[in-house]
Amino acid sequence: MKKVIYIFAVIILFTSCKKFLEVQPQLQVDQDQAIINAGTAATAVNGLFNLLAANSYYGSNFPALSYLSAGDIQWSGSQSDPNEITKHLTSATNGYVQSAWTAIYKTISQANYIIDKVPTVSDPLLTTTLKNQYLGEAYFVRALAYFDLARGWGGVQLILKPTNNSSDNSNIPRSSLADTYAQVLKDLNAAETLVPTAVSRNRVSLRTVQALKARFYLYQKNWVLAEQFATSVINDNANYSLVAPYSAFFANNAVTTNESVLELAYTTSNTNGHSNWWLPPALGGRREWSPNDALVALLNNPAIGGNRNTLIAQTAPPGNLWYGKLYYRNPLGTDPAYVIRIAELYLIRSEARAQQGNLIGANSAQTDLNSVRSRAGLGATTAATLSEILLALEKERQVEFPFEADRWFNLVRTDRAQTVLALPDKHLYLFPIPYNETLVDPQLAGANRNPGY
Image 1 (tube, rainbow, N blue to C red):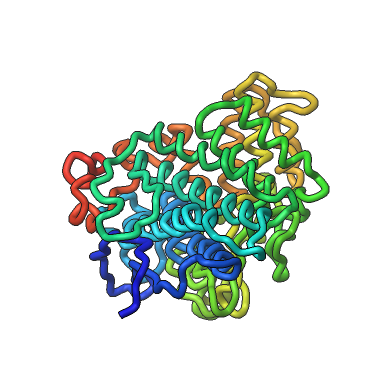
Image 2: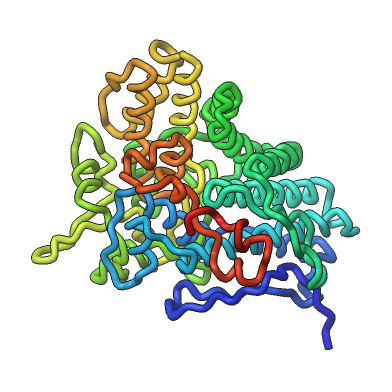
């Protein structure tokens, strides 16, 4: 019998009649797939990005948890799980919650394996430069994964070592939210010293790390550092810029434009599931969800959506059905997944400047907000006070990122979700710990579950 190396030891009891949510957990890999030389190290890192891009993570389900929660997307299909989410009735047995949680921890497991094994490999082809790159990318992806867990579920179990046997990484208590975010920063700091400076939009470079740091510090309300790191990326205007018109970063099969700080690539053999759920049957999709009337009105309002109305389209009569077309490509599933765009960095810096009192004038909060508006074909904002600018930023995010993992998490971050979405209780700010996880792990059961579920 072959020896095996365990890289993920959580027992998954989850099953579903919904084929697109079925999880085939990779509990172990053959020793032939272990990291033993330069080639297997490269394969492992490629596998890491495949996990990040998987349908249960950025390929569909994790962003869907955000935009389905944000009040602008309606359920228009047959699957019950998205209907739960749009109505804020998400249960601990929801398949999206389970699959996203599992996918994120699988990604963390692979990152842990790379961080542990790559430094021990002795192969002249695995140069110090390559080792640093692979390690830096693993630290970055682990940081992003824990960041996503923190903003979705709160403080979580911090698993930082690979699972080499079935008893490893067991009985780990949930960490506090502060400690979870501290781990994110620790990993980002490690990545920043290791990744290459040369720009990469599908992998990780220095600017990618700095962009996620800007987002991280925004969530921490560290306005000075949020502005500093956003500026580091924005000022690299030879490589990053707001491409115009708005649709230029995705229309006509565009990929890796100057708009993208990090986008994940897909092929016909490794597809992005988004288009299947957004497009109507006439275009090969299932239209399980769609923009609601309020969002359609906002995007079609030339004073609000501007040229961002290219995000939506309508089927021919007599159906006249509105659908999202950020993910539209033929063959289906080759659309990129957008993780960080330069527009977000402008809005981060705008908010950070506003919170520091730099509201109007040159190089102000107003300036950055107007940069995003101008690209959308809109005039300058009239917002001038702190409260006005913060509200304007909230509304700008709504029409800038309606089909990305943005609006819900920012409404929660700013404690505006309950007011804007008329939520009955703030326990809904966090997703439930998946029911099947509470069955197999006492550290996630009972009082360790998220309140209210």
